[in-house]
Amino acid sequence: MEGREVIVYEGRISSWLNGLLIGALVGAVLALLFTPQSGRENRQVIEEKTNQVRDQAVKLVDETRSRASEVIQRARGQMERSQELREENAILEEGVERTYDL
Image 1 (cartoon, rainbow, N blue to C red):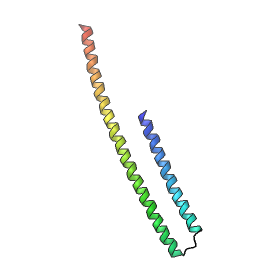
Image 2: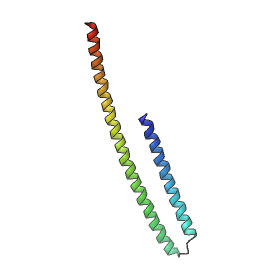
Image 3: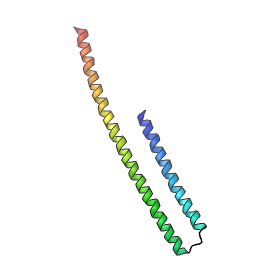
Image 4: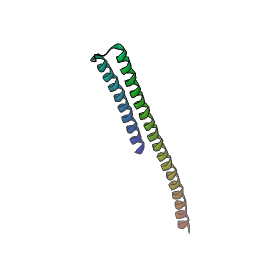
């Protein structure tokens, strides 16, 4: 069940990132259409906004990678614990079989 949660979570991040980028693009286009600035000023604004969006995207990617790494580490720990429990269960089953054989 936990694997499904990870897939849903990743889908939400992807959707959110797409929305962020599309929103930034639409906002930039609208700002250019309705601004009374010169071409030079518009290019400077575009450059600044592009840098801001890029920085936000890089930050989001870094946060997503960090969270994904945490999820992977947690999953590995759970897999290891599951293997330990299977081994302990096998030992207990063997002990129960020996008890019945007596």
